[in-house]
Length: 245
Length: 245
DNA sequence: ATAGTGAACCAAAACATAATTGGTTCGCAA
DNA sequence: TTGCGAACCAATTATGTTTTGGTTCACTAT
Image 1: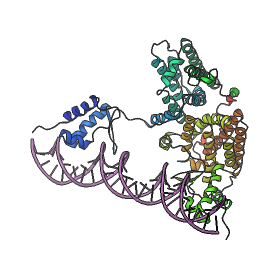
Image 2 (image 1 turned 180 degrees about the horizontal axis):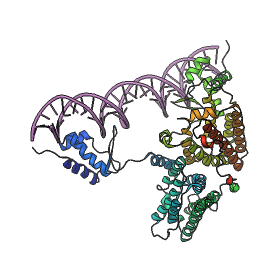
Image 3 (image 1 turned 90 degrees about the vertical axis):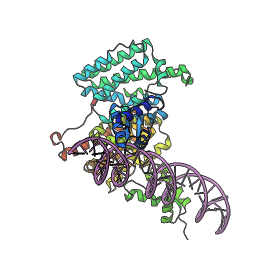
Image 4 (image 1 turned 30 degrees about the vertical axis):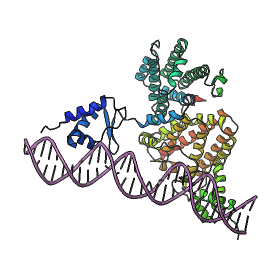
């Protein structure tokens, strides 16, 4: 009688994963089911699952089950929930409220090392062919600035907003708002922001970030108007109470 | 036999609210209990509750109950996680970044009905003996303002911060920061905020909220210094870059 | 002795069911 | 017509049971 080893069970489970019959985040059979299906003892099954979990292919939770892929963190889960109900323009408005203050805090707290990293991100040439990559670097810079504000609640709040732009119809929106001119403008504004942060000028950093976001918002407005989504108000520009200045 | 009118029930419930005799989670008796306690029919009780709800003093939810103050968004799971790592002073700093902008948005979007509710909350006499009740009404007003900003991501972000003050060592902190003078000052500032919102003056609302939060933060600083937690810098006041103005 | 096995047990999560609570409707009576 | 009580509805909570991963332990084959 041949014993069923952990290697065998491992192959069995990995086959399940690779067959494509299991989507991401799908439930795998329970340990007891796997034990019966493969003929291995539950101990052996757990050994095999542990090794697969260590590789990052699955994750397990007591009382819940075993799942393919990686668990979702609560922050992104909440972000996904917001996605369903929040309009892109709402998210941008929220960023316009939070990010200038984040930049101001960042200006007073960023270390020279962190500023160097910001320069590296801001000075990247944006003439990349892929739009995704462009957005990636943009997002990275904003995240770095948020981290340097050294305020965890604020950073969490920003993460919430940043996650939302990675999904849904943001892609199409972005594609329409991108042009050679706007790319150069974005880069110039990024440089202005980092320069203010490097100088430790909170007020200038706040204003630079506001300018940057206002530019993006107006681009989105015009893109939305072009797409006819809200064709009625095509020449509207978002000023968000200029009384602020 | 004298009939019990809605006015009577109304007085009965408002007394409950002001007495500070309400439960920790600020849950009010059920409609059936109120009906039995006051001798009024359930219909009359509902009339009274509806009027109080319209003022913003309570909120009701089917299957859940009737509660004092204003409802909170259910993001408690994530908020609990933030609680573990966030320092009170960090949270206040974050509020100082977000809430003035929320107040500004609110000033441009609040309906007259909502403003009426704000007045009801702001004009409450804060000379209640119980500290919990005071904090309850304060929190309710801030939540109502956040809701009237009509920006769900921002509201979620605020809820994140607001939930934290219900736990941990906030209680002791609050108790030390409360005094007769500070209570009156808080009430005056609340009134100033609502007045600016009613006038639709975004800039004034923003500044009024900033003043209010700065007062609270400084009170916390001094309380912390008195408690000897950070005795070193006892006469520090938090100015958060006056360059903003 | 050592490693493996199966069973039992534990704790967390899900699931199912009953009870509670605000919201609504309807018959009845003053 | 108006108001009351009762019943009913729907959302939510409370409670108990089942499932599931995590753990322990006596026992056995090697």
